[in-house]
Length: 153
Image (cartoon, rainbow, N blue to C red; front, side, top):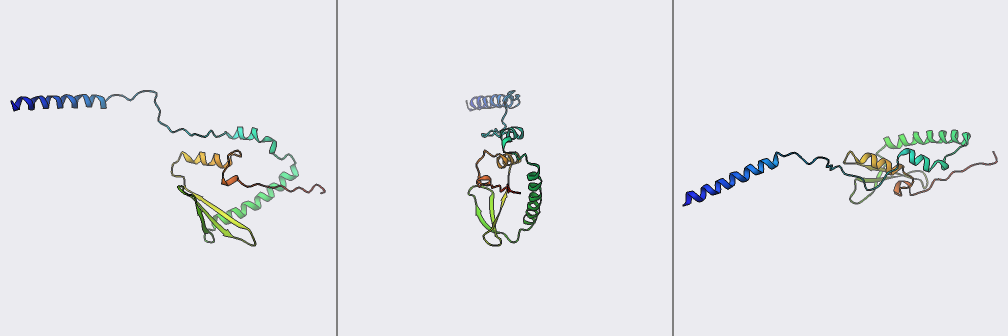
């Protein structure tokens, strides 16, 4: 009687393994995608340009002066980006790979430097779009920029 039960158990076991192999070897369902989608819609550069076109400067002299100022700013940026020894740790955002460093300059001027590590390659474009989008409120564009013009000259 034991042999009979053992044969039934082995038969059921082999039948279940055969069915399991058929299920594993089957093809995946067509048309399904598992790519993650962003919850925030980022505007394309052309859309951002059209939306903020009214903010552009049309005075050619002011544009040339702004270019000179930006060249000076670029030299300062290259210096501060290459120099890492003078900065002290300032703040770390919780649950993030964002580190802030601060350096005391002459007088009341503080220079802050951010260091962010994006772990996933698909995050790079989202981070760049967030930083450059004027409508996206974050710590990078929370301040204001002033423009001084000398009307009498």
